[in-house]
Amino acid sequence: KSIDAIFKGLGKLYFGTCADQNRLTVTANAEVIAADFGQVTPENSGKWDTIEATQGKFNFAGLDYLVNWAQTNNKLVRGHTTVWYSQLPSWVSAINNKATLTTVIQNHVTTEIGRYAGKVLQWDVVNEMFDESGGLRTSVFSTVLGEDFVRIAFEAARKADPAAKLFINDYNTVEKGVSYAKTTGMIKYVTKWVAAGIPIDGIGAQAHLMAGESKNVAASLSALCAVVSQCALTEVDIVNAAAAEYVQTVKACVDIPNCVGVTVWGVRDPDSWRASNNPLLFNSGYSTKPAYSALIATL
Ligand code: XIL
Image (tube, rainbow, N blue to C red; front, side, top):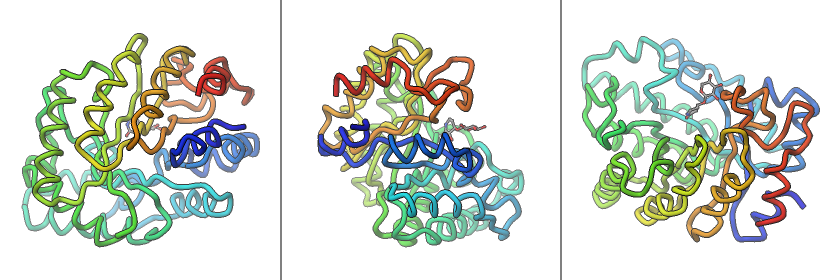
Protein backbone atom coordinates (compact mmCIF):
# COMPACT_ATOMS: atom_id res chain seq x y z
CA LYS A 1 0.00 0.00 0.00
CA SER A 2 1.32 3.46 -0.93
CA ILE A 3 1.42 6.43 1.45
CA ASP A 4 -1.24 7.97 -0.79
CA ALA A 5 -3.51 4.95 -0.31
CA ILE A 6 -2.93 5.08 3.44
CA PHE A 7 -3.76 8.80 3.39
CA LYS A 8 -7.01 8.18 1.54
CA GLY A 9 -7.88 5.49 4.07
CA LEU A 10 -7.39 8.11 6.78
CA GLY A 11 -9.86 10.45 5.10
CA LYS A 12 -7.28 12.71 3.45
CA LEU A 13 -7.44 13.72 -0.22
CA TYR A 14 -3.90 12.96 -1.35
CA PHE A 15 -0.21 12.47 -0.63
CA GLY A 16 1.46 14.33 -3.49
CA THR A 17 4.72 15.53 -4.97
CA CYS A 18 5.93 18.18 -7.40
CA ALA A 19 6.95 17.51 -10.98
CA ASP A 20 7.10 19.05 -14.43
CA GLN A 21 7.57 17.76 -17.97
CA ASN A 22 11.32 17.32 -17.39
CA ARG A 23 10.55 14.82 -14.58
CA LEU A 24 7.43 13.20 -16.03
CA THR A 25 9.29 12.19 -19.20
CA VAL A 26 11.83 10.23 -17.12
CA THR A 27 10.19 6.80 -17.07
CA ALA A 28 11.50 5.67 -13.69
CA ASN A 29 10.40 8.93 -12.09
CA ALA A 30 6.94 8.85 -13.66
CA GLU A 31 6.53 5.25 -12.49
CA VAL A 32 7.26 6.23 -8.90
CA ILE A 33 4.75 9.08 -9.05
CA ALA A 34 2.13 6.86 -10.66
CA ALA A 35 2.58 4.19 -7.97
CA ASP A 36 3.19 6.20 -4.82
CA PHE A 37 1.56 9.63 -5.12
CA GLY A 38 -1.99 10.85 -5.61
CA GLN A 39 -1.38 14.45 -6.60
CA VAL A 40 1.11 16.45 -8.65
CA THR A 41 2.05 20.12 -8.21
CA PRO A 42 3.88 21.94 -11.03
CA GLU A 43 7.32 22.74 -9.62
CA ASN A 44 7.96 25.65 -12.00
CA SER A 45 5.67 25.51 -15.05
CA GLY A 46 2.80 27.40 -13.40
CA LYS A 47 4.83 30.42 -12.34
CA TRP A 48 4.42 33.89 -13.84
CA ASP A 49 7.83 33.93 -15.60
CA THR A 50 6.86 30.77 -17.48
CA ILE A 51 3.16 31.43 -18.03
CA GLU A 52 3.32 35.11 -19.04
CA ALA A 53 6.95 36.11 -19.56
CA THR A 54 5.77 38.80 -21.96
CA GLN A 55 2.60 40.73 -21.22
CA GLY A 56 -0.42 39.09 -22.81
CA LYS A 57 1.60 36.22 -24.39
CA PHE A 58 0.74 33.06 -22.53
CA ASN A 59 2.80 29.86 -22.60
CA PHE A 60 0.91 26.90 -21.23
CA ALA A 61 2.96 24.11 -22.82
CA GLY A 62 4.60 22.88 -19.62
CA LEU A 63 1.54 23.19 -17.41
CA ASP A 64 -0.67 21.57 -20.05
CA TYR A 65 1.73 18.64 -20.08
CA LEU A 66 1.50 18.17 -16.31
CA VAL A 67 -2.29 18.55 -16.16
CA ASN A 68 -2.75 16.10 -19.06
CA TRP A 69 -0.38 13.63 -17.40
CA ALA A 70 -2.37 13.94 -14.18
CA GLN A 71 -5.67 13.32 -15.94
CA THR A 72 -4.33 10.33 -17.85
CA ASN A 73 -2.90 8.86 -14.66
CA ASN A 74 -5.83 9.69 -12.38
CA LYS A 75 -3.89 12.14 -10.21
CA LEU A 76 -5.14 15.31 -8.57
CA VAL A 77 -3.42 18.64 -9.30
CA ARG A 78 -2.44 21.48 -6.94
CA GLY A 79 -2.05 24.65 -8.99
CA HIS A 80 1.08 26.63 -8.11
CA THR A 81 1.17 29.67 -8.29
CA THR A 82 -0.38 32.84 -9.74
CA VAL A 83 0.76 35.80 -7.61
CA TRP A 84 4.30 35.58 -6.19
CA TYR A 85 7.08 38.12 -5.85
CA SER A 86 9.66 35.61 -7.14
CA GLN A 87 10.03 34.08 -10.61
CA LEU A 88 8.16 37.22 -11.65
CA PRO A 89 8.99 38.91 -14.98
CA SER A 90 10.48 42.39 -14.83
CA TRP A 91 7.62 43.86 -16.87
CA VAL A 92 5.36 43.15 -13.89
CA SER A 93 7.80 44.48 -11.27
CA ALA A 94 8.06 47.71 -13.27
CA ILE A 95 4.35 48.57 -12.97
CA ASN A 96 3.76 51.52 -10.64
CA ASN A 97 0.13 52.29 -11.26
CA LYS A 98 -2.80 50.79 -9.32
CA ALA A 99 -5.25 50.48 -12.20
CA THR A 100 -2.68 48.85 -14.48
CA LEU A 101 -1.45 46.37 -11.89
CA THR A 102 -5.04 45.47 -10.95
CA THR A 103 -5.88 44.67 -14.58
CA VAL A 104 -2.62 42.78 -15.04
CA ILE A 105 -3.26 40.60 -11.96
CA GLN A 106 -6.86 39.98 -12.98
CA ASN A 107 -5.89 39.02 -16.52
CA HIS A 108 -3.06 36.73 -15.38
CA VAL A 109 -5.11 34.95 -12.72
CA THR A 110 -8.21 34.66 -14.90
CA THR A 111 -6.32 33.30 -17.89
CA GLU A 112 -4.19 30.78 -15.99
CA ILE A 113 -6.79 29.47 -13.55
CA GLY A 114 -9.60 29.67 -16.12
CA ARG A 115 -7.72 27.46 -18.58
CA TYR A 116 -7.77 24.52 -16.14
CA ALA A 117 -11.18 25.14 -14.58
CA GLY A 118 -12.58 21.87 -13.23
CA LYS A 119 -9.20 20.11 -13.48
CA VAL A 120 -7.35 21.56 -10.50
CA LEU A 121 -8.22 20.71 -6.90
CA GLN A 122 -6.48 23.64 -5.22
CA TRP A 123 -4.62 26.76 -6.35
CA ASP A 124 -1.90 28.64 -4.51
CA VAL A 125 -3.39 31.96 -5.60
CA VAL A 126 -0.95 34.01 -3.52
CA ASN A 127 2.47 32.67 -2.52
CA GLU A 128 4.98 33.95 0.08
CA MET A 129 3.39 37.35 0.70
CA PHE A 130 4.40 37.71 4.36
CA ASP A 131 7.73 38.79 5.81
CA GLU A 132 9.34 37.26 8.89
CA SER A 133 7.78 39.90 11.16
CA GLY A 134 4.31 38.90 10.04
CA GLY A 135 3.67 41.94 7.90
CA LEU A 136 3.31 42.23 4.15
CA ARG A 137 6.50 41.42 2.27
CA THR A 138 7.71 44.30 0.12
CA SER A 139 6.90 43.50 -3.50
CA VAL A 140 5.42 45.28 -6.48
CA PHE A 141 2.05 43.93 -5.35
CA SER A 142 2.16 45.30 -1.79
CA THR A 143 3.94 48.50 -2.80
CA VAL A 144 1.45 49.50 -5.47
CA LEU A 145 -1.80 48.03 -4.12
CA GLY A 146 -1.23 47.44 -0.40
CA GLU A 147 -3.10 44.39 0.89
CA ASP A 148 -5.86 44.92 -1.67
CA PHE A 149 -3.92 42.76 -4.15
CA VAL A 150 -5.02 39.76 -2.10
CA ARG A 151 -8.70 40.55 -2.65
CA ILE A 152 -8.11 41.28 -6.34
CA ALA A 153 -6.30 37.97 -6.90
CA PHE A 154 -8.68 35.75 -4.92
CA GLU A 155 -11.82 37.28 -6.41
CA ALA A 156 -10.48 36.74 -9.93
CA ALA A 157 -9.48 33.17 -9.03
CA ARG A 158 -12.91 32.31 -7.62
CA LYS A 159 -14.60 33.57 -10.79
CA ALA A 160 -12.18 31.73 -13.04
CA ASP A 161 -12.72 28.35 -11.36
CA PRO A 162 -15.52 28.26 -8.79
CA ALA A 163 -14.76 24.59 -8.03
CA ALA A 164 -11.11 25.04 -7.05
CA LYS A 165 -10.12 25.53 -3.43
CA LEU A 166 -8.14 28.74 -3.19
CA PHE A 167 -5.03 28.77 -1.00
CA ILE A 168 -2.62 31.28 0.43
CA ASN A 169 0.77 29.59 0.78
CA ASP A 170 3.92 30.49 2.71
CA TYR A 171 7.11 29.22 4.37
CA ASN A 172 8.41 29.55 7.93
CA THR A 173 4.86 29.35 9.22
CA VAL A 174 5.08 25.94 10.94
CA GLU A 175 8.84 25.70 11.50
CA LYS A 176 9.54 28.22 14.23
CA GLY A 177 6.80 27.72 16.81
CA VAL A 178 3.21 28.79 17.31
CA SER A 179 4.17 32.25 18.62
CA TYR A 180 6.49 33.06 15.71
CA ALA A 181 5.58 36.46 14.28
CA LYS A 182 5.11 35.21 10.73
CA THR A 183 2.72 32.49 11.92
CA THR A 184 0.64 34.82 14.08
CA GLY A 185 0.76 37.50 11.37
CA MET A 186 -0.60 35.12 8.74
CA ILE A 187 -3.34 34.02 11.13
CA LYS A 188 -4.30 37.62 11.90
CA TYR A 189 -4.45 38.72 8.25
CA VAL A 190 -6.19 35.63 6.91
CA THR A 191 -8.80 35.78 9.68
CA LYS A 192 -9.51 39.39 8.78
CA TRP A 193 -9.67 38.71 5.03
CA VAL A 194 -11.97 35.70 5.39
CA ALA A 195 -14.27 37.78 7.64
CA ALA A 196 -14.28 40.48 4.97
CA GLY A 197 -15.54 37.97 2.42
CA ILE A 198 -12.34 37.43 0.45
CA PRO A 199 -12.69 33.91 -0.99
CA ILE A 200 -9.72 32.23 0.71
CA ASP A 201 -10.47 28.53 1.31
CA GLY A 202 -7.17 27.34 2.61
CA ILE A 203 -3.75 27.94 4.08
CA GLY A 204 -0.74 26.09 2.71
CA ALA A 205 2.35 25.63 4.85
CA GLN A 206 5.36 24.80 2.70
CA ALA A 207 7.42 23.06 5.41
CA HIS A 208 10.95 23.15 4.00
CA LEU A 209 12.39 22.00 7.31
CA MET A 210 15.80 22.34 8.92
CA ALA A 211 16.92 19.78 11.51
CA GLY A 212 14.95 20.00 14.74
CA GLU A 213 11.99 21.96 13.39
CA SER A 214 9.46 19.15 13.04
CA LYS A 215 8.52 19.38 16.72
CA ASN A 216 6.94 22.77 15.98
CA VAL A 217 4.74 21.66 13.11
CA ALA A 218 1.71 20.21 14.93
CA ALA A 219 0.86 23.22 17.09
CA SER A 220 1.60 25.80 14.39
CA LEU A 221 -0.34 23.93 11.74
CA SER A 222 -3.39 23.51 13.95
CA ALA A 223 -3.38 27.24 14.72
CA LEU A 224 -3.26 28.01 10.99
CA CYS A 225 -5.86 25.38 10.09
CA ALA A 226 -8.27 26.80 12.69
CA VAL A 227 -8.89 29.99 10.69
CA VAL A 228 -9.74 28.47 7.27
CA SER A 229 -11.87 25.63 5.97
CA GLN A 230 -8.91 23.64 4.63
CA CYS A 231 -5.17 23.49 5.09
CA ALA A 232 -2.28 21.45 3.75
CA LEU A 233 1.46 20.89 3.94
CA THR A 234 2.45 21.90 0.42
CA GLU A 235 6.21 21.57 -0.16
CA VAL A 236 7.67 19.26 2.46
CA ASP A 237 11.37 18.44 2.44
CA ILE A 238 13.50 17.84 5.53
CA VAL A 239 17.27 18.02 5.97
CA ASN A 240 18.72 14.53 5.51
CA ALA A 241 15.16 13.17 5.41
CA ALA A 242 15.38 12.34 9.11
CA ALA A 243 12.78 9.58 9.53
CA ALA A 244 11.44 10.69 12.91
CA GLU A 245 11.09 14.26 11.64
CA TYR A 246 9.22 13.13 8.53
CA VAL A 247 6.84 11.09 10.67
CA GLN A 248 6.26 13.96 13.10
CA THR A 249 5.63 16.41 10.24
CA VAL A 250 3.29 14.22 8.21
CA LYS A 251 1.46 13.05 11.35
CA ALA A 252 0.71 16.68 12.18
CA CYS A 253 -1.48 16.89 9.08
CA VAL A 254 -2.98 13.46 9.62
CA ASP A 255 -4.10 14.47 13.12
CA ILE A 256 -5.81 17.71 12.04
CA PRO A 257 -9.24 16.99 10.56
CA ASN A 258 -9.27 19.82 8.00
CA CYS A 259 -5.69 19.23 6.84
CA VAL A 260 -6.50 17.68 3.48
CA GLY A 261 -3.11 16.47 2.28
CA VAL A 262 0.66 16.57 2.21
CA THR A 263 2.88 17.32 -0.78
CA VAL A 264 6.60 16.54 -0.72
CA TRP A 265 8.73 18.82 -2.90
CA GLY A 266 10.11 16.26 -5.30
CA VAL A 267 10.65 12.53 -5.71
CA ARG A 268 14.39 11.80 -5.50
CA ASP A 269 17.19 13.66 -3.78
CA PRO A 270 19.28 14.71 -6.80
CA ASP A 271 16.24 16.45 -8.31
CA SER A 272 15.47 18.45 -5.16
CA TRP A 273 15.93 22.22 -5.11
CA ARG A 274 17.83 21.46 -1.85
CA ALA A 275 19.73 18.50 -3.32
CA SER A 276 22.72 18.94 -1.00
CA ASN A 277 20.41 18.23 1.96
CA ASN A 278 19.16 14.88 0.57
CA PRO A 279 15.72 15.89 1.87
CA LEU A 280 13.33 13.60 -0.04
CA LEU A 281 11.87 10.09 0.27
CA PHE A 282 13.67 8.43 -2.67
CA ASN A 283 17.40 8.16 -3.42
CA SER A 284 19.16 8.67 -6.74
CA GLY A 285 18.26 5.14 -7.83
CA TYR A 286 14.55 5.78 -7.12
CA SER A 287 14.67 3.43 -4.13
CA THR A 288 12.78 4.33 -0.97
CA LYS A 289 14.73 5.77 1.95
CA PRO A 290 14.22 5.02 5.67
CA ALA A 291 11.80 7.94 6.10
CA TYR A 292 9.51 6.34 3.52
CA SER A 293 9.37 3.02 5.40
CA ALA A 294 8.92 4.88 8.68
CA LEU A 295 5.89 6.68 7.26
CA ILE A 296 4.39 3.44 5.96
CA ALA A 297 4.95 1.79 9.33
CA THR A 298 3.57 4.65 11.43
CA LEU A 299 0.63 6.17 9.57
C1 XIL B 1 11.55 26.18 -6.33
C2 XIL B 1 11.79 25.07 -7.34
O1 XIL B 1 11.80 23.84 -6.65
C3 XIL B 1 13.09 25.30 -8.07
O2 XIL B 1 13.23 24.38 -9.14
C4 XIL B 1 13.17 26.73 -8.62
O3 XIL B 1 14.44 26.95 -9.17
C5 XIL B 1 12.89 27.75 -7.53
O4 XIL B 1 11.62 27.45 -6.94
N1 XIL B 1 8.83 28.01 -2.41
C6 XIL B 1 7.97 27.79 -3.46
C7 XIL B 1 8.39 26.96 -4.62
O5 XIL B 1 6.79 28.19 -3.37
O6 XIL B 1 7.80 27.38 -5.82
C8 XIL B 1 9.90 26.95 -4.76
O7 XIL B 1 10.24 26.03 -5.79
C9 XIL B 1 10.55 26.58 -3.44
C10 XIL B 1 10.21 27.60 -2.38
